[in-house]
Image 1 (cartoon, one colour):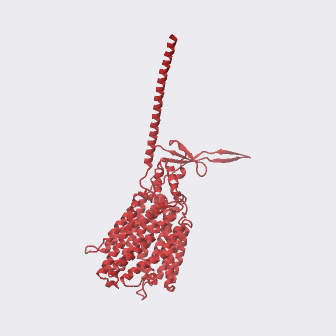
Image 2 (cartoon, helix red, strand yellow):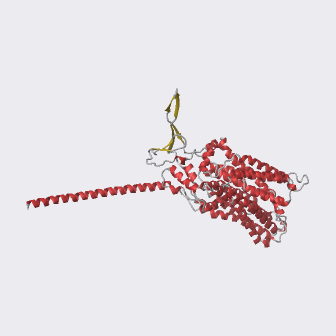
Image 3 (cartoon, one colour):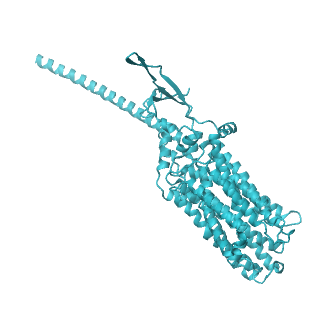
Length: 625
């Protein structure tokens, strides 16, 4: 019995010890699991915080937010590389089509307004001047928009580089919409001058139109896939043709709707109350409807994300990343018949991957160097010479319309109807095919060859018109006119818009595009106010017909086209190159994406990566204190 009691006591002791051990083990396991769960939760929270930290605002069906796709990547260089790679390699699809429509709204409105004001001036003349508006008044109303456009191109272009694309994209469209509506409500009274108020509103509208040039160009460029970037930008600009066609169609509908009020007025003097009322309502409706496309596209412009290039090149803080190039120099010394290799001291070169901050001083320093400044001279000079001569074709419009039987009538209805139909025919015959010929070939032929060939053809055509003007029949002049329209658009008119949106570094891309576009508008103003008046130079004094000096003006325009050929030599070819490759090749900019750190396990450690040439690159992250 004693032995049995002893055995039971020992078993009881071991059982209690085992239970306590199991309890301790279970408790320890629970503590470890809880610690692991806490650690995992902490890491997940930290990851979520990092994702929130790198997220950016905006994004819609037309402009995708590529940066947010890689917000979980902590390394800014890797995040930059992945985002830009996705943009550059995206296939052409519905997203790009929506981009074309939204970015092209401004150009559609611009060209619509140009068509509307030309016909609108004729309608206004019947209301206020019995059909004979003073030439100075007509010129003022047309040129006022161009003056505002110059201001908008330079102003909005500069602001987009200083404060960002997203913050101001849409503001120019709001300005265009408001001023278009204000024009429609303008009336005459003893206290105000109708022309002065309308001119003021047209200058403001021109500022909005001008702002759309650099903004829509560079935003489209920075969001476009590399392979079809030229076609996408060209399609945006080609909305000008659709704007003119839309204006012509609406004008035709209006004239047909008011036919009963217009048909009995055979001259401007016979345009009575009903006729004047109809003309007054028509020009207001015609110009006012130009605001509708802008209203439709406004939401998408106000909700775009910041341009990925601007966010990653200008806004990004890369000062916390230090890149150094380590090179081992090897020297060979010959001592008699023997040769020995000795390793020289290792050379360490620090590389700045953060571009300089945007400033007037840096802009002047960069473009003050001929290597870079000649590109800006080329883009601005080509646009200037083109727009001087681009206006030259409009001097022949009256003759061309008369040739095809759509001019010459004094009846109010017939005159308005013929003007709308005749211009529609000319646009569809020359301008529209030229725009889309550029769109379909610019990424295969290239920007520079198309521009060069266009200037050469236009030089020849203007010389033919200028030196053989009186020997060409009306139908011959019609053929030359249509060919000129085609090669202006399948040529420098499209390429001068595209190239400035690609060939400059991100921090000055918008400013340089604005300067280039403004140079073109200055050329148009000079042509309208100075060269345009030369067509009647000494005609009355010498007893000659009106427009007697027109052939000589065409010869002057041919000289400008010749100058455009030589200025084209200054611009680079940008076909099928990423924007970073263009900046690196033509502006010696550093592409930070080449210095991506792979397998970075510790932010406090230095990491070696391969680079071009001898040696290696070392990237060091500096901790913020």
